[in-house]
Image 1: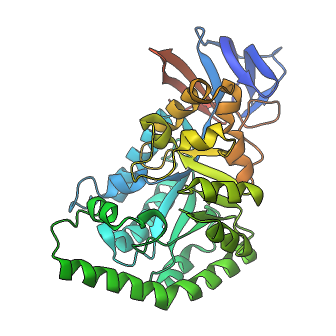
Image 2 (image 1 turned 180 degrees about the horizontal axis):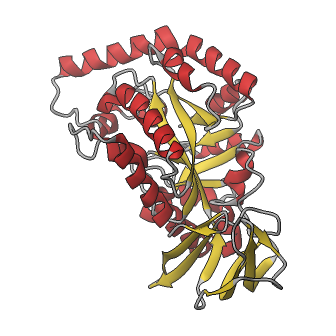
Length: 376
């Protein structure tokens, strides 16, 4: 049982507007402040809902901290990742773990199993400050995709699947020169590069269709949301809608985003794209999509601190209110994956919250509560 906490003297952004005080009781937001056990002074800072991250690659960085270096201690890796997320204001984390990588780049097939074991072990020992769910990033061209994900089908942590096809020459990697740069392949001979392309394209032709059918069956059986990844054309979107996709992750063009909106898909874009002012791989700007009403959810992707920063930048960049901007990192992602108990500071909702101070217009996390318990 949590003690009742009375938070006061703040700019508290609730579902009903800005207020200056709020009460947490028994892990929930409540409107009863009569029996508050203690008081917390927010010192004029913002109090916002805990951030919800649907797609972070951050865990992988703690297993492979440098190219060619594998970190052997899984529990310390997940614990460090968890602290990183909490310090960025994220109280609900969907760890995006790649499975079925056809070229096994960064030893991702081995990392997949290590990541699952580390998350489970840390949760069992109550080491995690944020709540962690599993997002399987499924590479359709992978040889052993379905076999690899079978062991985690019964896990309650599994809440989201996304379908990806990073075969060079299409979608995110239509520009082969950008593909070469990203994968550090400019030193390869023409013959070596062609050999790689042929290998990856052969795997796609062999595996993509059968793997997609299997994943669609899994999502239907488990009632799991399915996301697409890097849609480039309207045809890509229409195909994925037919496959049961409800979220469009990182559409690479305005055309794809507009088609996603026509079909009612939730559109997810990278927060680093907002903070940096554009895509690192030359795709459509998230700011442009936001200005055209084509942005529903932000994801920190590879940079946890970008999630909060991007949300606070959106009002200046697009003219929307801060409350609406924060919905892209709170209530919208919660609704997209069926987490109706969180995402806003409202009576009866989970008391996940972040104290934020603006320093030179940069949002800085000062304190974090999860289910009413302070974790930072």
